[in-house]
Length: 314
Image (cartoon, rainbow, N blue to C red; front, side, top):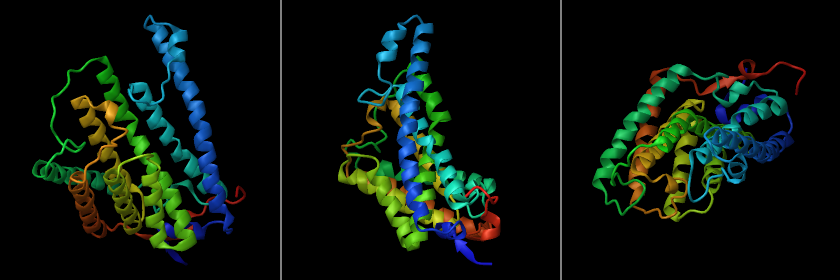
């Protein structure tokens, strides 16, 4: 039986060069459609909550919950959920268009390898400690990676932010990984091979964050490259998701602690001094994961019998 790596899993599914192209259009169109539905739903929920707290339903309904210059817990929840929908959308495209089990987006085993995921979470914590050490050694230059500033006092909004960060941000991070390091990696891997499967999604991931200074773009591009290499070398998304979740927890948690939530989504004023800090985290994590994976017997390839979905729905 033919063995393939993660990036070439689509070659085990239903034939047709057009299927990935339709899948990308499917993801993009439904992503924006569900975004509109989510906006309406969260706006109504926000208005109901405000009315129960003694406010005006109509005024609350007219307030935009979308993230803007002043980020609210509702705006952060919208951001997290709007990206989390990429998980079921990518899984649907995998099943309906390619005839593969949805779990094939997670790994070559067709499922989440929980033992490996737990190990990766521990490695991400270790890499974060290395980041903190480097952050204390390089000039801060007032960048987002600087661990300075005063701790703000907690109020009701703070606790709502904390709840959103803890409960929803992991799904936001996983949604981005399912789309960029999952579906798009398999699309470009099936078309062009491993190099394109790593490089192109990393570029698209960086561009998807909108306008940004060069250091911020390079940082996100490097993050995408490291995550892409991890996916190929470990045969799944577990390592990339664990790194992404912990990175976002730390970034949002630090911003909340220091009262910088309004700046966390748009770090336009990046500095080149931030790169040694963030690259330390990514590269230390990459090295640890690549060292541990073979020692835990993590598979990089699989055959078609493990991945094929039931017949009759392609």
